[in-house]
Structure formats: structure tokens, C-alpha cells
Image (tube, rainbow, N blue to C red; front, side, top):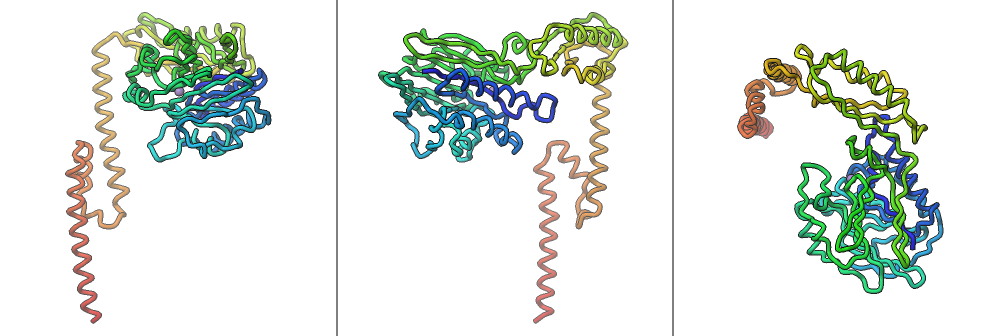
Length: 435
Ligand SMILES: [Mn+2]
């Protein structure tokens, strides 16, 4: 049996930027080539969408792409067993073409009781959603069991996985699919995984995990552990420039065949760090422009899309220079029709401490004046509102700024109470007048 493994398409990522179609182009290619290459089952390991509640424009494109496996119209595998899932959730439509089985990722996770977008796709019959359940597919005398746990908050991952405690199906090739951080494969510094490779339940033939955006092959209990990596380039970090984007084609037979298919639609991506030592702004300007020109002369893999160039500036500035004088936007604009240039200058150091202190002082002053501006705006906009003369706007505002919201609220309650009392009095008088 041939399976395609696709992870983290993040549809709708970078919306409103020159890269807004990238996630769709790359996901469409992954799906189209999975079909071309003869995949009989497509597994998507979560984060199909970049957000929990995608915009309509994102939905429209996603639905169009996800209808392709269904539109294929032929299905060479049979769903023969459903474990721990309500069969009513599976639309008969989803088995009319190449079946797509998907997890939801952390980007799609919603509070219990609310429908996440992967469940919505399941309702439309475009895929089958797995969360703590399993499906067994059959082709001839071969059976493949897919066991899936969609994303859960990292701190509960290990506990929830052991509570689910999935068991391999006898006589089948067993796949366990997750969307979590695992051990050293941590996605960001803010996440502490509770799950370690050794926590994965034993006895499965293949372990799969989404969430990690760069492709990686490892092993768990002596069997392959595959992170296909995202099809979309969500982070402009070094590892993303080194490891190409793609998906896996898995052939389950006498032996396990694993083939990584690189996406042709991915933009060329250059990640460059430039280190300066006491450089002036004009020196940096010149060096960065020269670097971009140099990168643009390099041979291209994908010449249908302008390449993405991320330059990270490191080192120190000249004493008299200030980081804010370096206009990275101007350089990006200058190359806009040939490349997407993203320059990071946050790590460029100003050597003079005195200057830093001055900057902090300025920021503080700016903040104070911002408060004052906000105050004036608030006063102005409340001037015409009814009863506002009853409130001391300025003192309310200072309470809010000082994080004393409770006191501010009490003040408001007092005023409202007196207003209600006055109204009631008036009503009483009116009523008295009528009778
Ligand atoms: Mn992701």
C-alpha cells in the first residue's frame, strides 16, 4: 500500500503579504503529486490551517485543494475497521476517492465543544479526523492501521497519550501519528515537551509526528520516527533554509520504502548572517545591498517566484550610529520586484552604554507622552457622551494605567448606582403625577 504523508500546510499563513499564496501552492503541489505518484491513502499530520477560524478566502482555496483526492473518484483501499470513533462522523463521501486522514494541530485546536476547522472538513466529507482513535484500511490481504492523536497542550501530552494507550492492531502494519513536540525536537523555546521518544507506546511499525516544521528522520523503539516537516515555510530561520520542504511517499510491502519528495513550488530561501564591527549606517547599507545583489546572481531552483532573502545583522554599530537610522524598509522596497528581503537588525549592538540609557529615557518619555495623548483623546471622545460629566475621567484613567482596574470599576459603579437611584425617584414622581 502506498501512503503520502503531508504535514503542517498552514493554509492562510502570511496572508496579506507577497507570500500569501505560498502555503496554497505548496499544499496543492503536495496533494497533486501524491495523487500522481499513486498514493492510495493521504495522511495529514495537523495544522492544515494557520488559524482556528480561517477567513472565507482561505476556506475557499483549502476546499478546492482538498477536493482533489475525492475528485480522483477511485479508491483502492477499503475502510474495514473503526476503533473508538463514532462511525456517524465519517461521511460516505470521504471514501469515494483517495481517503484523506488528518489530525488537527495546535493552530486549529479549539475549546471542547467547539468545532475546529479539521472537523468541519470531515463534516464536508473531505477527510476523516483522528483524535484518540484508529482506522484500519485494507487492500488485498494487506492491512494498515492508522492510530492518531491530534494536538493537546504540551504539558498534558504525555499523560493524555498514556491514558489513550493505543494498541497495535494484530495482523496490520501499525502507524502512530501525533502532532506534538517530542524530546529534543522542540519547536520553540517557549514550549517544554513532556513527551519523550521513550514515552511513545511500543509495538508500532511507523511513528509519525507533525508540528516540527523541518524534516527529520529518527527512530522510536527501533522503528522509524518521521517528521515530514511543514510544506509551508513559516519561520525564517537557518534550518529552514538548509532543509527543503516536501512530503513523504511511503510504500508498505515486504520492506518499508520511504521517499522524500521535494516541492518544486517552494521559493528559494537564503538565510544570511552578517557580522559588523563598529560599522556606520552607510557601511551597513552598502554591505547589505551588495549581499542581496550577490545572492540574486546565484543559480535558481525555482525561477517562477522571487526568492526569499533573510538577512540577520549582528555585531556592533559605530559609536555615533543608532539602529533606528538604518532603514531596512528602504532596502526591501528597492528589491521588491526581484526578491522578498527581510532584514533583522534587533541583534545589532550599540557599543556606547550612555547612548542606550539615553534611548531608554527617551522611550520612557515617549510612553509618558503617549499616556497623556491617550488621556486627551479619551476626554475628548467622552465629552459628548451622556452623564460623562459625572465621571472624573482623568482619575479613572490614572487608576487604569496604574493597573487598579478594580478601583476604577468601583468608582463607576458608584456613579451608575446614583444615576439609577435618581431615575427611580423620577419615575416614582412621574407615576405619582399620573394617578
Ligand atoms: Mn505547525
